[in-house]
Length: 333
Image (cartoon, rainbow, N blue to C red; front, side, top):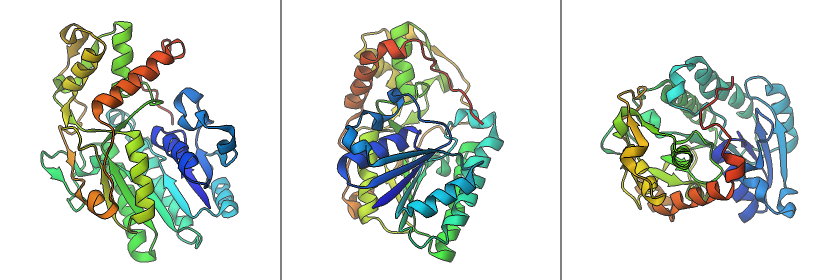
């Protein structure tokens, strides 16, 4: 079976490819707007050569190269599409909101307007975000109303609502996944867990925005990939499934940093500085996962402590390649 991953250079997209090549016999095709990243940031590039024979990459941007993409899709005829192409950095969506809307909303409209007529497509997995719900202290069920707080959340919601309309009118085979904060080895270095580890190893102070009081839940990428494949097998078209790590309670960012300091035997108070700025981010959210537990039979396996230690080991093992790299977000149009 041919399947397609759109946004293959993304952290989740590259790990999904890696997982599919390991546990299925699918032929995996991929699009990303940039050429393939260094193998340091592509999980699937550590695959056995025999598995990589089933992998095919195309550099193409959904905002610029749609005709090329459509022609390749007509040739490949994928039965399943995993969609990870997105501008996904919450804080910086305030700086370049038009770019977030171009990709996360208009890009989805253009891409799926072609796909709605493709009878070979059986399932379209839309990687969405809890940011569409906005700030809440209650556990969020899939049926909750939407109230996004950032351009990122609003633009992702627009894309989701478009796909919901296509499902209602055309029977478009979309299934939505919404994961809490995903992490693991091979992640971009500006993300909170790898950035904190690298900063501590370099002796650079960590700025705690919103004084570190923002609360988040973190789910390991391996658990997300397993959940997604189970959703492919057992999930229902048109439904939303939450993916979260309920082995651990949601954690304040300052406590997350403190946990990493303890692992690296660093003095927390000497390693951080506080800032009131929070860039309009939600204070907290926690996903209810009863639906994926009951209907799909999925549960997380990797605790936050175990996952952080894995990232520490990955950074230490690759330190010579990582130490001179930037941990700041670089915007690409």
